[in-house]
Length: 413
Image 1 (cartoon, rainbow, N blue to C red):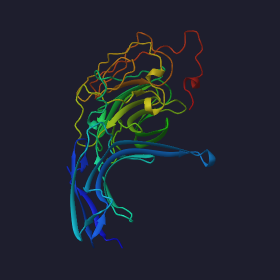
Image 2: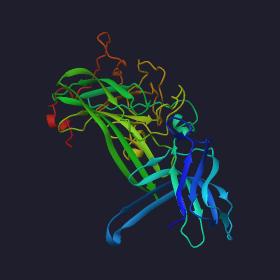
Image 3: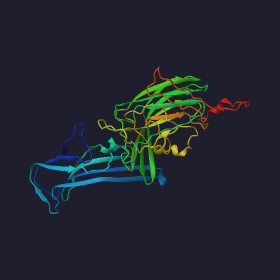
Image 4: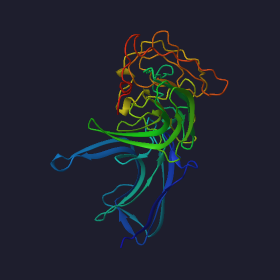
């Protein structure tokens, strides 16, 4: 039976959330009781932070493992000096104090996922000759200070995002109240739909989370829909405004952007569900920060999250972005919408820059609006007093030509 009893490590909480960050000093004690006098080779406390990913693909002889590791810091403090001859500790209760200062630097917050984790740990270990080491570990709830200013390493003014698509049948414009939020917050989306087709459609909203693991130039992607909402049905040949409010789940993983091998992205997807057609979609990247983290100030960027507009998300989401589409041939902006506090921007990839929380989109077909077409905009808070300009769509076919078959206007899934 081991003579070491109640080997324990305790550290002092710095706040009510029990979180630590860069530059914080963590102090605590290592305690244990000895039933008899023993000789130890050393007693130390370690503090470390590291990220690891691991997954397998294939089976049998074709199975392949992917692994990656990043170390952010490793600190040691000897409570009993290391000595091969051993140091005698008497019988009874023992208390040793320790103190660490976490280094400064751009380190990611703690994270645990199916294929990887980012862990910050305190560990106490006692070594004895001819015995297995005795040890105890405590995880630190590390919250990166860089969460409060994601993308602060980007220079220049706020980058703004915008996208425009049109097919002459369905037009949709949308805006959200914020691009930065915390668990438990509510994200609001409002917009307008002009349905010039003979099909009815329904508005839908989804808060999405995408985790990307990276190792050996390969990636493993995990997609999850955190919550969904179904809106009203839009009748054929009608114009409707819409709004929704989605509450961010309280246990959501925070946005993670500053780890080379793990990243966590969030986005709000607003789309139209149309039978036998590509669903027109607006995608708003969101930055989810811990509760109580100071909000960004106007003029600070929230990147590096690429703007995503159209039927698919872009950038890390693995599908076409702005650089994959030719610039539109019709005039863009400026749009008559207010730009108030809390407007945060994203890389525009060469496109003009309207209000950073605005996306303007029509369903994803290739017909271009003519040069004289009026911009399709709306107020951030629709009401009976708001006047919306009526968009003028180009003719679908020339005079004297037979119209194309109706179903050819919509591409099947």
